[in-house]
Length: 184
Image 1: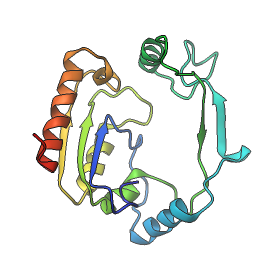
Image 2: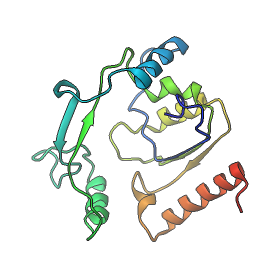
Image 3: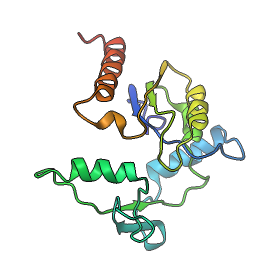
């Protein structure tokens, strides 16, 4: 959204997933303009043809009980943290993929992000569609001030509190915010 909204000043991306592989053909400004117009003014609502779900977000056995997220690490995190009393989390969600005039890819939007960006990327991210080389390519396309930070322990490692990876993520993000906005 930061590519489409000029008021965005900062992007903090924790373990972003940009796709399993680079698109076969490069997109340009004209494709981005058509995509942006659809996002801001087009029909992006749910229809039966564009909706998957509702279904479990995670499953103890994704082959027998399909879910939106398949890795066991996702199951562990959502059940450990979402399953806590009072969390309000419900293990059901829907994914809506409305039609767009060009196939969506974060790489389509990257050259148009004017906000400063911090990408914290897990080299061993276990999520489907996570590819370290694609994330690096996305980062290279960002035109503005940016910072890259490798973080260990996979996609969910930095979310466990208390813990050293959580503390590392907080420290890196805090330093970036101070640098960008002068907070102290």
